[in-house]
Image 1: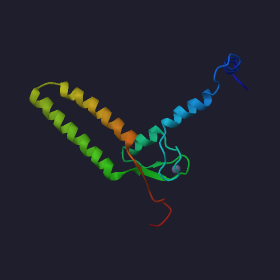
Image 2: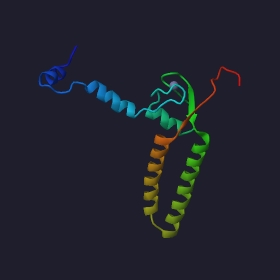
Image 3: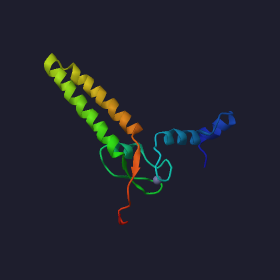
Image 4: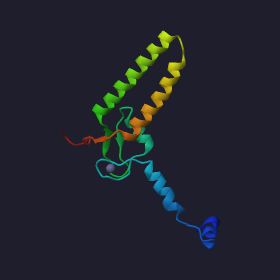
Length: 128
Ligand SMILES: [Zn+2]
């Protein structure tokens, strides 16, 4: 069953490959599983991983978590940013540094979600 728009697009000679294209855009937002190398991890799951949570690959079901050392380092930077900007705000008696802090916090969060590598964890039912 084809939609009228698609038929119309074909008749007028437009590229009807939209489905494929939107799939590609979606897969750009997905992250590669370190175990099965499929794009089985959604943005939401990746974000949860950056909150120290265990996530599961949609393709192979592997237990995954964010690289603990890098995540610890990212949290160190978060803490450092909060402490230094709150200190600056206190001494300058201004709320502007807090505003900058929010922006820096959001960009740090974005960078860490986008670039944090994932580690494969041992399955729960298998002895170590
Ligand atoms: Zn996988």
